[in-house]
Image (cartoon, rainbow, N blue to C red; front, side, top):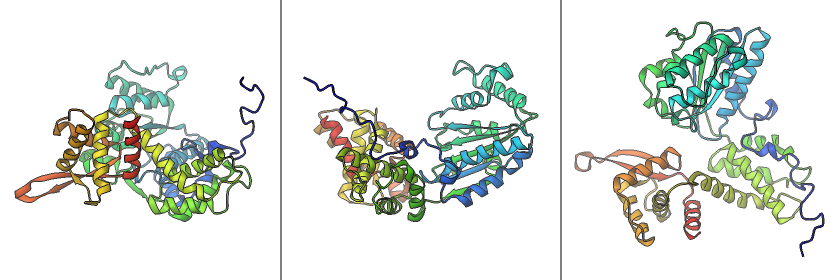
Length: 401
């Protein structure tokens, strides 16, 4: 018979006091943004005219994942809105996740909905059903009715299908689409080469100011994690746990998101073991678990053949034949072997190329173009950005399951 006593659930968490501080989606307060004072000042300087209702500079921010780009852009935008209000200026900002809203229509709908108040404007912005041009017309009307100045934050701007929305936003005032409202665009990209593929006209109007956010070093990562230390109960963190997690993250990637993930997982390991202290030894286990879970999330919902292609690249990477990547033909050769082992018909070389492009889009792999001269012509090399051991482990357990 099942025990119906009160000991089935833990009423008080012995490890975490406020676990939300360790969630990626959590936007920390001013005191918790660590190691980005210079970047915040530069960004604030670029958009400073907006607090007086004047046109802010358009800005492009580059940097690897987890370097604080979105965090700082949102923080500066929030502060700008507050400061402008003190000057009697109606300001706002709209945030667009371009990895989710990849088309021009989706992005402009998200912006229009974010800045609209139908009670104030008597304008409706439905989720779908309107043409792109109609969404734009409604956006321009909303902006002029409601605001003196608006910042548009386009996060992961490189995931947009094309540059059309950048052209529209960066030239809205010049083209006479808006009269009263001044518009500024902050584009955020993980890819330093993104600017190279921009339309020249967009480049000239969007890239007025450019900032590069470097990876965090071990000291900054330690400060970031210590600033969120009150996510834990008092005295549960071993003194060496945060320095160890910071050193590990700095050596591998300088990514604050991953570092915070590692700290959270270390706490969960302590929880699951029923021990009162988050020990240094849990950090290595936490790092492996964080990488594995993140990769699982990345490939969730992908097709078997999409996974076979990744498995092929992981096997090649583990063989350590080359460190700078593998040609498509070599990846395809291993992929065909995996298909035979799994009793599955292989896809065409062209379709496998497409699958590799999809993985590059998700930043699972990196692609580079090479020229073999007149004898070989041009070819593409593919390099796994994930830990090949993690990739092999996740894909193998998925196949076995």
